Image (cartoon, rainbow, N blue to C red; front, top):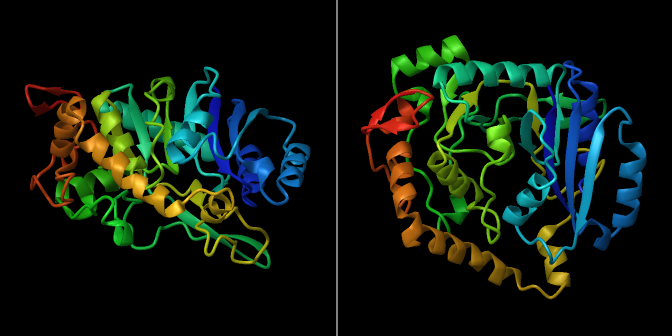
Length: 342
């Protein structure tokens, strides 16, 4: 039972080596891990050459790797970067997409496989994906501190919150799924699984069906990634399940450096500005990308299906349906006669 771990890294990220080493050392299934790493513009940034040579030197020798470099202006935005890492997949049994700043605790692979099997039985759908907002980890002078529960989140519920970016894509205005019904709470308590309204790009885990999903539109810059990915997965008949786990954690950088200053990651905006790219214009492209997708006549059917699924009007971000389909159970799709058959 093999697992492909898909990682895209823009420039340099001090957490990438730790991400790989924790995944390798804390794996217990002995199933074989294959890391697909897309380095975007890494050799072009300050200390990039050193970063690459030290990364390759220090990689655990017991695992398999495919590392490919891309020019900074060749793969612009998260859509192209995610696709680049996905393209290195080579037929492994499971596919895990994460960010380059992730911590894996002991037995993480066993936990993910077991939760996916549990969720697939509930959904009765081989095209099931585990996804959700991960808990976090930080550092002190002694090393990693798992914080586990995400700030303000119940059961790692994945919800779009545009905050200062609401002019690009509206915030989703609805409640945490865990507050909706007593029946749903019983499901979560009994299975440690809940339905997910959308994916979180920093954590998605599935089987070969997920590995062979459609690629993201190349023009995606950043904020629109998760909603478009969710629309596409629902259209392809996937079920989205949200696990309550502590096996995988995410590092939330502050001012592009770790809490102890043990390293930094590349400042994306600065690097593009140095190369003559008007980043204000690139940010504006998010709006164009979103509008072209949401207004494309070819996308209207699947957009309507997702709005019914999520209960959200994607143009306003406001509640559209009081009892959306995803509240009912995890396996909301495929639909037969408009009824939930999961």
